[in-house]
Image 1 (tube, helix red, strand yellow):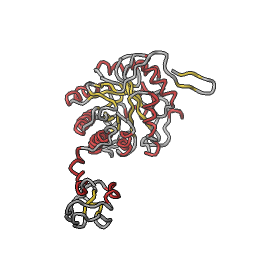
Image 2: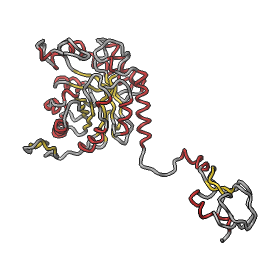
Image 3: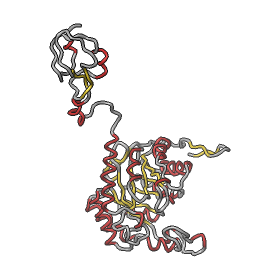
Amino acid sequence: MLRNTGGGVEIHEGTKAMKKHASFMIDGRMVGKDHPPYIIAEVSANHNGSLERATRIIEQAKEAGADAVKLQTYTADTITLNCDTEAFQINGGLWNGKTLYQLYQDAHMPWEWHRPLFDRARELGITIFSSPFDNSAVDLLENLGAPAYKIASFEVVDLPLIKYVASTGKPMIISTGMADMAEIQEAIDTAYDNGCKDVAILHCVSGYPAPASDYNLNTISDMARRYEVVTGLSDHTLDNATAIASIALGASIIEKHFTLDREGGGADDSFSLEPHELAVLCRDSRTAWSALGSIDYGRKPSEKDNAKFRRSLYFVRALKAGDIVTDQCVRSVRPGYGLAPKHLSEVIGRRVCRDIERCEPVNWDAFGDE
């Protein structure tokens, strides 16, 4: 919970015992740092008013290898007010000139689409869940059997909504765009204190699109240490580089907006991945995770056949028994069947006990008991 110390807000452990999990399960899939990255394709407004298009997005996400697709469940009336005063106007950016109500009226996914989309995702074997924006959306998603919930960045300060979502007992993924440390802690505490057992947080920059330079990915590893929950990335950059880099810093979940066509003209199309890009993200993020492995200085299986080509000491001149080895007689060369190069100074000046052929590896038996 939070305590005001007079000089600022101090973050400390909540009053209720919170059992934090390094990993947890969503719809039969383990999510956490010891498991391959969990890739979420965000449908958002990219249905562009077409149930058929929304269905195709889900089908393409499955084909690309995503673990889950995510919807957004709201109406214009549940997310804002039908008002055109200055506070409700959007000035600049992708949606310049619209009111919030106009934007969300155009972008929202009709609630009657949710069941056929959930049904199609289940037919395909891809997990589907959503971001609810009010309690009625949670009720709808509960009726559909949503296996998890996502709290959008703009709603991270809506603690009553988080409390209601937590009461379902389902895993909760919280985006943290625009939130400070205290707000993130409040959201996590609210989730745990109200029945949620499994919480993940996503580092996020709420720009559409967001430049990679704003992401400060080192924050991800700090978040994992600070909050001790599963951590990931909600990525609004235009390519996959930021998302792939986040894997090395501990991101266990990657969320990217996904569309059939970046030129589709929808509210979110322009900063979304297309199918071939999502397929690359799924492949490369899992490759990056696999490459992290564990701390291991030992020789790897793929190196074993090449170890013989390391440098070692070889005789470069023929010698007779009793000859003294000079620095003109021995060199460090490939392959690696002779003594290690570190023994060169021990070899120079010694007398060989038998005839030596040119190109023979230097081994201790060339010197007998000397």
